[in-house]
Every structure is written in structure tokens, then in C-alpha cells.
Amino acid sequence: IASVDSGPDSWDEPQLAMVYQPVVRTDDHTVVGFEALMRWEHPTRGNIPPSVFIPVAEDTGMILQLGAWALRQAARDATAWPHPLRIAVNVSAVQFAHPDFPGIVADMLDATGLDPERLELELTESVFMGDGEVTDAAFKALKSLGVRLALDDFGTGYSSLSYLRAAPFDKLKVDRSFVDSCTLSDQNSAKIIAAIIGLADALGMETTVEGVEAFDQRDVVCAKGARFIQGFLYSPPLEQTVVLERMAGGQ
Ligand code: G
Ligand code: G
Ligand code: MN
Ligand code: NA
Image (cartoon, rainbow, N blue to C red; front, top):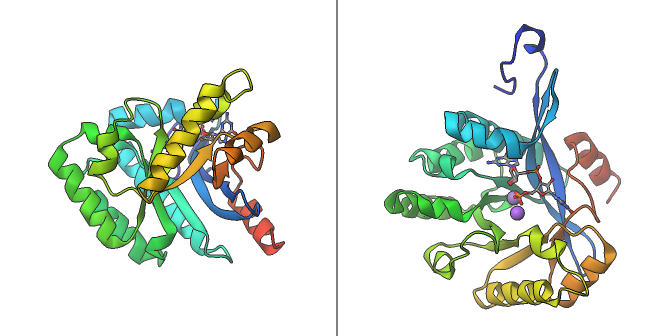
């Protein structure tokens, strides 16, 4: 399943891989978990980014197999880590809308032995565009499995506050566009980050600020109350072998 058919030359080479980007706690700089991100290394076209192939996979329905593979691979890799850190996996709205989705997650937890509390599913607000009954049933079923739910890319799109009331999110991920524009000349982005963190705090949700690339950005978002951050300043996404080496090295 990890080999996407693109011609006879490539049948024996796995082309899909998962990489893992650390999420860092700001007060002591420790890694508390990782976000799993899919990579497609095409034999002739090189690296095809997920922003290109995920939408195609959604249109063709192939996202169901890709998504199930990503979940299983990430869970398997996480169970091999010497420290039981959290693993966040992105879930497409098309996957989430499938009535079998909670069952697929349950089977994957059984098959891999991953502690459900270590698994965080990253959803975007597009899940709310689907059938409300299916969505509600999925939220209930997933919460009863004990997995965590995160609302990804928060602050883009509609960011309707009713979504926060409607669904049991454990975390908001502040979209990286706010950090991008977080400069001394743009005080508004920093204020919006502070307001999102305050809102999440009040609702008992964690936040992760994404896309922190520079020390001055880190200082600004820390001053605005960020407790968890993710971004190239700390680390790009890493291959599993590198994650294992770092953990063995006590990092
Ligand atoms: O890895 P990168 O930063 O290029 O990711 C770009 C987009 O692709 C992000 O929105 C991310 O959520 C999405 N993406 C990456 N990996 C996966 C995956 O395994 N499943 C789904 N559904 N989306 C993914
Ligand atoms: O939409 P989502 O949050 O799932 O996408 C995460 C994407 O952000 C991944 O493609 C990842 O490679 C990318 N990313 C992670 N850290 C940074 C960063 O510091 N800067 C930028 N520009 N992209 C980042
Ligand atoms: Mn994400
Ligand atoms: Na995001």
C-alpha cells in the first residue's frame, strides 16, 4: 500500500513515507510530541508535496487508503519510540466523513497497541461541512476511544466559534500565517495569537503555535502565552531513524 503505482520502474521502491516534526514546550524546551507528515518521493518527479497530492487523493477517494496507511505507519513508529510521546496525525475531512473512520482508528489502536491517549487527530474546520449526524457520531466514538482531537489551521477559514462549542477539541493549533506576519510593525497578529491562546485557555484547551522559524518570533509568541510551539526554529520534520537516534541520545 505504501507504493503508489506510477509505472513498472518503481514497483519495488516504497514511495510514501511519514516524517515527524517535534512539538516543543516553551518553558523548558523539551519535545513533548511529534506531528506526522506524509511525504511522496516520486521516482522520476522527485518530491511531490502533500499540498499537491492530498487534494488529488481526496478527489479520487484514494485518501481513504492513504489516510489509513498514514495512521497505521505513524502509530507503529510511535510505539517503537523509547519515550511514550504524543503523536499527532492529520486527518482529511473526506476520511473523517466516512462512517467507518472511528472503527478504522479503533482497529489501528488494537493492531499496534498504541495507547489512545498518545494519539492526537488533527482535523480542520472543513469536517463541519459534512453531514452533521455523521460528524457528531464520529466525535462521540473517537472521544470514547480516548484519543485526543486537535483543530488544525485555527484562525484561517471561517474560524466560527460555534465549532469550538460543538466539538470536544483538546487542542487548537494556531495557523502559521499569524506567526509569519508577527513582526514589530504588525502588532495585530501577535494580539490575535494572544487572544486565541486566551480563548483556548478559558475553554480548557491546549494550544500549539505553528510555523515558528526565528528567535524573535519565538520571543513574541512566548510573551503572548504560547506554551507549545512547532516550527523550523526547533526542527523540520524528521525521519523515524533520526527521531530514534535523538531519543537514544537523550534529546
Ligand atoms: O508537510 P507539509 O507541511 O507540506 O504539509 C502540507 C499540508 O499537507 C498540511 O496541511 C498537512 O496537514 C497536509 N498533510 C501532510 N501529511 C498529511 C497526512 O498524512 N494526511 C493528511 N490528510 N494531510 C496531510
Ligand atoms: O496544515 P498543517 O499544520 O498540518 O501543516 C503543517 C505544515 O507546515 C507541514 O507541511 C510542515 O512541513 C510545515 N511547517 C512546519 N514548520 C514550519 C515552519 O516553521 N515554517 C513553515 N513555512 N512551514 C512549516
Ligand atoms: Mn497539521
Ligand atoms: Na496548521
